[in-house]
Length: 313
Image (tube, rainbow, N blue to C red):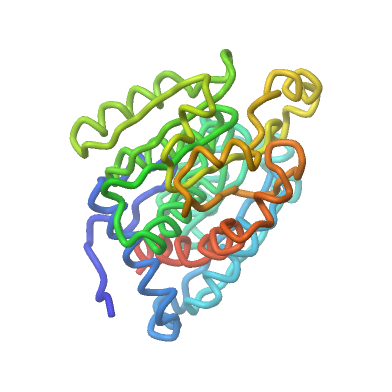
């Protein structure tokens, strides 16, 4: 049983993985596995704590895993839409941040603008968790790390291939992989590369951890000898008007049986969900025996419980 914790993470924001050290991320993964193994040991850890959850975007996994997570740790959740708050009628983010800090113990927000979340954190005196922005999706990456470690019991010498848009999921995967020493190869069409600043941060971290990072337009190269093959939808929320163009641009980037034949024979398939079968992934792959998408989704709960314990416990 893992006994936690370090005081360095209490009260800390999770806006992106960059606020946390490599060691803290590794510890969070281990704590998540400990909580998954023995959840009753942590069932009163956050007794009396209240997590506020603000949603600008629809959600299944983020909402249910965070709400279930805080309840299973002994705390409570208040779920809010921005339309229900005065912030939806023009109240400054600064005022909302100060007011919420008087009432609750932490805020998880799922929205569009990363800058808005940074502004919320700047003025709040309680921890702010990024449940998803257009730039980062750190909570998904934490669950992905937990899943990979659960299967391999190490990150060393393990290769993750990501095929798809250089989006928020890709950004957080690049940072997560770099921080734990996991090799990552990302393939996307020209013009869909990851944000340059995020990529440079990942490269910088990788020089210390030994992670190998590769960005390519060749999906076969990316998948070659991979232990895990990961993809995401080609059109994220808010990009629906680009759907036809993206569908054309990503032709040849679907994760098919032919593509995964270049990965290791015992590879596993990952997807953050929701998925569009027969678009970014073949049905036979995502519903096949080497797919871990439901285990991966389930690990959102355990990774997020670990995060809540580390910032509030």
